[in-house]
Length: 369
Image (cartoon, rainbow, N blue to C red; front, top):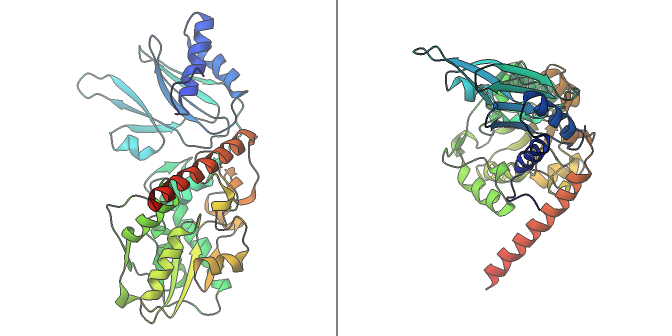
């Protein structure tokens, strides 16, 4: 293999190096042509930033715009020189005092040459399908994605979910409780819209990372136990409505349900700002296996039983789309409608499944000995 590492980004470096070696020179036109050719071969999500000696800084984004990519500029107050930077989220740029200009468009190449000139070229037709999970969970709440702030999106999701909760529940809960951190804004919006007290009674250990993105099930379950601590006095005898941004594998929700039950809650409900996640993601979010998803093969009653709560209430697809401004979205993990061919993704999923089973077998063998 011409690739030297397991990093997927190395493929782009190898492809461009081969193209320019054959072309005999490196130019903006040549980079555009190389990416046009590449886009006809590679189907998936990519937001790439790189540097080519003799040319300059470049960035490009897949034709579907599945992942975000922002462009920012900053003027040096002493020299007057302009600096350019790219980042997935606007906050990364503003923290470094860059002015956020706009997004790199789906199927667009941006080149900043060594002499400071900027060139923007279209290398593929745009078919926007922005990943809804960026607003729901992945992005920082102070970020701005595709002209919609993450804060506002999550607030909208909470208001929309509140309508569904009101229609679905026979008796309102005593308190609305967010599962930290991502669901906080939505839970506040829901509590305000329903006139129900909002209480933060799950205290987060700030030194534990996001459990969703940990490598394996054992690590996720271990981290959840160290991540959150309930305030028992504020829970005992209450009808508690937990709000989470999404329910993927169900690990966090199930463990928290056990904690809340142990504190003496009178009843326990769970509301998700995202509709049921039923299908794998092949575009960079870490759930490539359908069997891992709590909603992958279960109906609502079975999900409720699996999570150990009295009722599960999901956001509707209509509520999700309206909350996100009716933007063109990738909702493949919700409805199975993938924007690209997923043959390679399915091969990767099978490989990942075998890899995890091998890791589990090795772990169990080590425990046994």
